[in-house]
Image 1 (tube, rainbow, N blue to C red):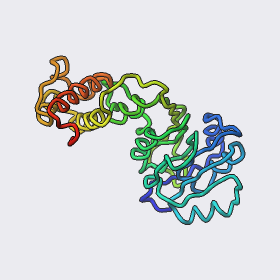
Image 2: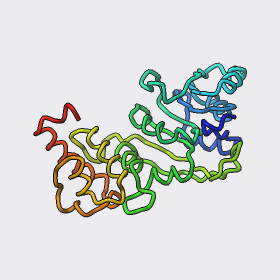
Image 3: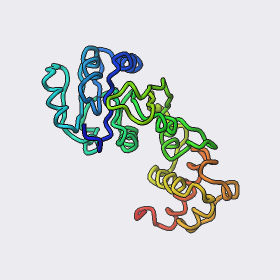
Image 4: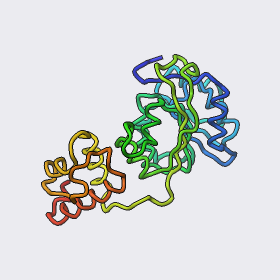
Length: 255
């Protein structure tokens, strides 16, 4: 197995069955699976779903999966990060994700259309997904997941459930896209860029960061705070203030 892809195959069939159960897979579902490996999850999904789209980057696993001859499984040999998910039709996502693509895939997933996802991540990454303000795990990921979805950790998975075993335990996570956003921002790109900026300077005070990068002073309520002290709603309010400033200066089209 090529470790550069961070792929640790799930070999515990009981955990795989629970993952499929959590996802509530039924005969009308089309499921996206990323990093199927030797198909432990794929076979279970094919038994319950109408259709499975399995995206695998490793050629030897692609050949292995095709030899299983699962009639309702479409196997795509590709890097999922290079695929436009809007070109695929699926309503659920179930996967034991290669750990090295956890972050880029999660952000990509949050911008796609689906009804439910149940995914296995490194435990530390999963904790960051559900972290609250004023906690050490609170991060850009926490804010953007909160903005787009309702998320919870379903269970912790021991490293012994994988081959090769990772250095740390994993966790199974449920992601449900929000039908209604918890708050609205005037421009989502400004919001995303601000969140990224604040957490890339997380030990600095918000007022100094915004003044340096945008040339404006923010509300005194936020000036002396740091990123981990702001709620997602606070960041949304600051991003709207920045958007209004940029818009008034006719800078938003070039931003």
